[in-house]
Image 1 (tube, rainbow, N blue to C red):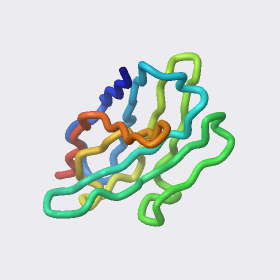
Image 2 (image 1 turned 90 degrees about the vertical axis):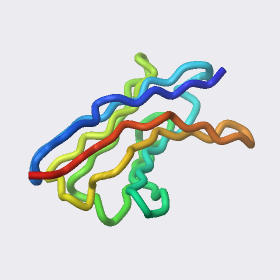
Image 3 (image 1 turned 120 degrees about the horizontal axis):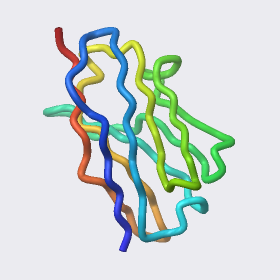
Image 4 (image 1 turned 60 degrees about the horizontal axis):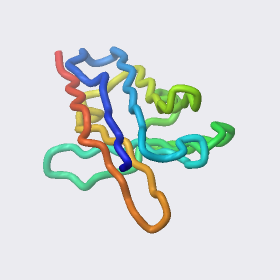
Length: 116
């Protein structure tokens, strides 16, 4: 049974940093690319970052390039999202996502609030 459990969200001031984690279980983590998505109230869910199974290739939404870094530790079945220089518009629920075969799997999310 695939499970994705996010953590690391919280309240941070503009310009601050947070590091999100997503621990995966129920599948062979090292075989799959992993995504971070986010959804702000009243907005569509959007892709934030992607990392290939081996970590050798990464993609980012234009809105976070140069500020966010995705990484993974395959030995710990964990994907990370380091978020720096946070802006109020980064406030959202952040989700970990994997597509395994023809099925989509989402975590329950972790809330990031950016406010002074």
